[in-house]
Length: 301
Image (tube, rainbow, N blue to C red; front, side):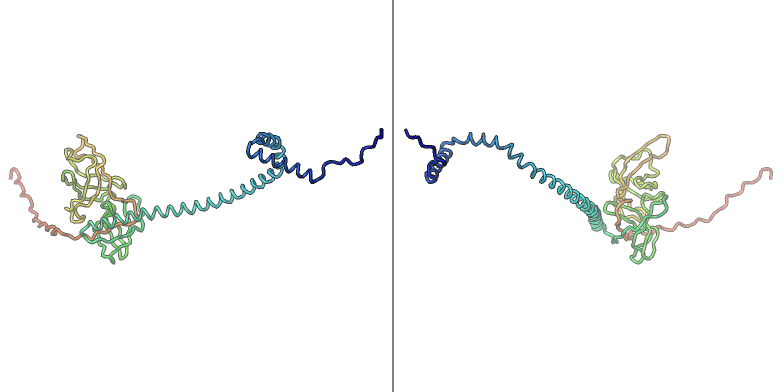
């Protein structure tokens, strides 16, 4: 029997046959995967096995990316923080100015409303500064004799009486506030019509009714308006509200504390009321000649 050695190169199917075989196998797998879903489990198993290798392969690039992102984010955060801090300061300043303008606008609206309610002619004045004396309650306004401001004219705001003009200069005027110690305002209780005299105490938030009998009907919450009997303040202007009533039988008069309704220490604009003297002048009292009492006769004369 003749024996032949094996060929040096193993021969198999031709490349064309291999192409056809693998193409057919690929098409069969595609159809089986698309129709019957046979390869989903195999795919999941392969992804689980390959995932650690993918993470290890992408770790260096991920570390470099995160480090660069950290430094970039830190720098941008510092820049944004500084920018936002500056914008916050600017906006806070603008907000404060806006609040101040809104408050001033509301006060001016109240002044215009009060101006429409007053029958007398009024002049809007701006408060320039307060008096330097700490024991007096006075302000200086930017309207004077050139604007027909005269001593004795009342000064009001959008709520009530602020004070009275006491000294006039050509372009300035000095106003004594109703809270000044010794300043008197004749008032009327709107609840029962009782008249009284309201005096300043030197404290911006307190006024006191003087010489009120113990049995006078004054109670907390009573509204006091100008009575107009002094010829200076027009009648009906709000002045104060009763806040505390103390009656002690050891004293002749009750102690009644009130709080002013007007902003005596607020705002920067007031109204000067050019009130007209509607009542006739007070009659001049005739001086009676002094008569010496008759001398008594001496005894034993």
